[in-house]
Every structure is written in structure tokens, then in C-alpha cells.
Length: 145
Image (cartoon, rainbow, N blue to C red; front, top):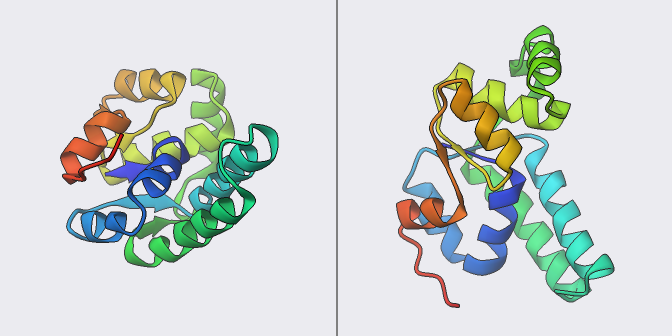
């Protein structure tokens, strides 16, 4: 299963260290850019929206990078830039989102995302898609409200 930042970021914020155990039990992958995108989510939540403290943003960002050591990390070198550009233009996706799509397709992975446009493009391409709630049920993480 491939996680994008729209599910990776809240998973870390909500589940904290429990996420290590859950993700180690399953074949979970991220892109090499996912921790950076995730830290950007935390920056937005702390600086622009004031939903989390800067201290919590830093802790979550560090955890996002540390967790990547336990996951399969798909690098940009593994993605065909020709296919990425074609998918991006054809599906009207950002290059970032097209990278998630082609990585999921080429590695035969399910895609976990909250991004509706990416989810729709993935489904149209034959990729099974899970949203955040489905992902947490799959991982068996008990989350507090």
C-alpha cells in the first residue's frame, strides 16, 4: 500500500508512536517526497491555521522522517519521467500526484489518499484506493476522537 501525504500526515498526528507498530506489520510504501510534503502540512497547521503548536509540528515532522526508515521508500529515480509527464497532463494532476499514481500502478500497490482528484484518477487507472478511515481500519489502529 502506498500512502500519500494527505493520509500520512494525519496518521502521524493522530496515532503518534502507535503508527510504527501498525505500519511495520504491513507492506507500506511512501514516495521520497512524502516526508517533505507531510512536514509542509504540519507547517500549515501550525503557522497558518494555528491548529497545532509549532512544537507539535516539529515533533510530528521528525516522526514522519524517522518512520520512513521502516517503510519502503520509492524514489524519483524509480519513476519514469516520460510516463509521469504523460499521466500528469492526461489526468490533469500535479506532477506530485502523478508520481503517486504511477508508483502505485507500477508497483501494483493500493493507494491511500484523501485527495479526491488523485483518488478518481487512480480508480480510473485500475488502482484500488483507500481513504483515511479505511486505512486506519486496515491498519487496526484505534484512534481517539
